[in-house]
Amino acid sequence: MYFKVLVLFLALPFLLGYDALQQTKRDEQAPDHPDESPIIEETKGEDENTKADTKRSLKGYRSKTKQSFGDLSLELAKLHILEETVKKSKAITSLQDEVNENSQDKCTKIKKVGEPIVHHHSGYYYGTWMRDPLGLLGPEKIWYMNNFYGNKVLEFEDMDHFKAGEVAKTYTLPYGFDGSGSVVYGRYLYFNRANSKYIVQYDLVKEKVTRQAYPHGSIKPRKYYYPLSSRNTMDLSVDESGLWALYSYSSYSGKLCATQLDPLTLSTLHTFCRVSSEPMTSMGNAFVACGVVYSIDTYSSGTTTINYAYDTTTRSGTNPGIKFVNKFGYNSMVTYNPREKVLYAWDNKRQITYPLEFE
Image 1 (cartoon, rainbow, N blue to C red):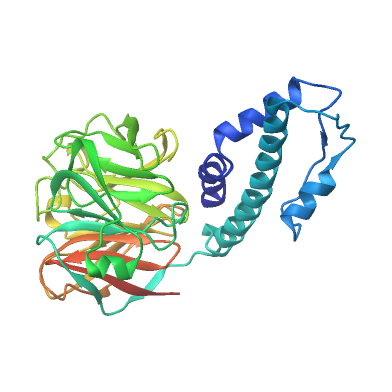
Image 2 (image 1 turned 180 degrees about the vertical axis):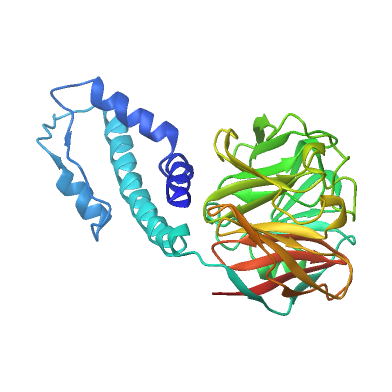
């Protein structure tokens, strides 16, 4: 249920547009010409023909022989807003259907991780690449962050453009990022601000930082981290229930904690600690899927296992012993995409995905 609510909160402002909604409210409350303004009826998103709906929704319009340019502009603006609202209402309905198909209510545990599929060979030994699980800015878009640190994010229109190296857009972040645990969720990029405990929310549409927060005050940057780099203090993850931060601190002997965050405000919703069987500094990586925190034993051994799975619903852990392959021997990033039901990973300059089989 968390995923359904969070997605609709994220989708509504983006799809409907704040300015358009505000303009509609102002027009309804204080029309400039009460005698000439059309009466706008409620238009339903499921109607087949948007233009026909719009025409039927306008009635009682008293036209004059002559109208000022301002009057005509206002009527055209209202017509445009109504048409866009109908289109975007349909988009929300479509998104809601997709969310229902991928909701936490239908979640089960991972049974098997398949062999890695190589999509591209590029960049440094380590980095981050991902798609947005909501697909709000485009379901095929790919975001790419080369290396463990820096302030550049590359955007590609789809997989073909990614493989061809054709960059659609380059974002320059106002702060450097640490580690390979960044994620894109909706219109936002979330990353760990360099050498800090802060998670930054960066708006990819407005191209600016909108919020910063930390999941726990006791986090010490670059003290507890995955062994492949001291910059991996914070590992962000997205599953069917929303946005998660994985980290550690001294109170739990360096074992993982998982905090679920409100993706809009970055406020803490739930925190679970001791969700791994070994310290963060001894494990390879971790990710969250269907409310379960999965820990990978090592990042460098060719064949390893998911050696611990902590279920945040039952608050219990098991050792599933699921086989996991680090095919190229340096797997610096593993994260789950709940829309595609695959793992995204970066293994020794290769951008790969792992197919998943659920119980």
